[in-house]
Every structure is written in C-alpha cells, then in structure tokens.
Image 1: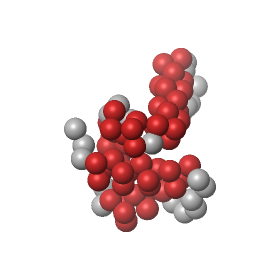
Image 2: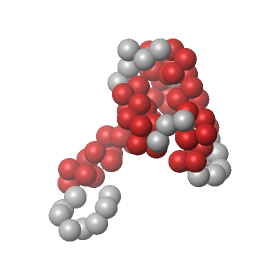
Image 3: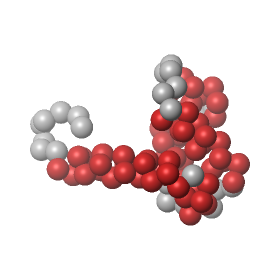
Length: 85
C-alpha cells in the first residue's frame, strides 16, 4: 500500500493538470518526482485502485478511472492497422 504522502503528491500533481496547468507534463514529472513518465503512470494507475486515494480525492480518482477505462476500451476495440488510439 502506498504511503499517504505519495498518494497526496501524485494526486495533487494530477489535479493541477486537470486544472489546465501549462508546460510539458513529462518534463514536470521528472522535475517534481525524479521519475520517468512511464514510472509516473505506473504509480498513478496503481494509486487509482487504492481506497486511500479514493478517500483523499474521490472526484479526481473517479475521473481518472473513467479516462483509464475509456482508453482501455479503445485499445480493446481498435482494429489492427488503424493507428494509435
């Protein structure tokens, strides 16, 4: 289970992006967390399944879960050779 500080820092960072933060997100991820973007998204996706994250910010976590589900559905239904989703 991730610690409360990690949950808070990742969700606060993600909330800023939902709020229209500007700049390259990948650069900001490296600056703020010292992680590659791939690692950040691994951590974020794991956090979305944690009840502690839901308690911290149920609206944001709900939105992010919806985005994740929509993207997963697009990947499942995409026909081969039609490009990236």
